[in-house]
Amino acid sequence: MHSNTVEGFFSQLKRSIDGTYHHVSVQHLHRYLAEFDYRYSTRKDKDGERTMQAIRQTAGKRLTYKKPQKG
Image (cartoon, rainbow, N blue to C red; front, side, top):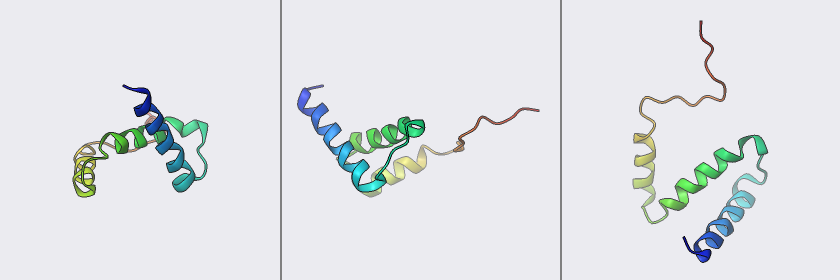
C-alpha cells in the first residue's frame, strides 16, 4: 500500500464521518471503520452490485450487540 492510498483512505474517512455521522463513539469505532473499509474497497463497483453483495453476505447472520445468553 502506498502513502497516497493511505492518505486518500483517511481523507475520505474523515469526510464521511463529518458528512454522514457527525460523531463517532469510541465504543463502536470498529464498526464505522469496517463499514467504511468495505465501501472504500468496493468503490469501483456500481451501487447495485455493492448492495447485492452486502445482502448476500448477510444470509444466516444476525446483527447483535450483545452475546446471546445460554440456557
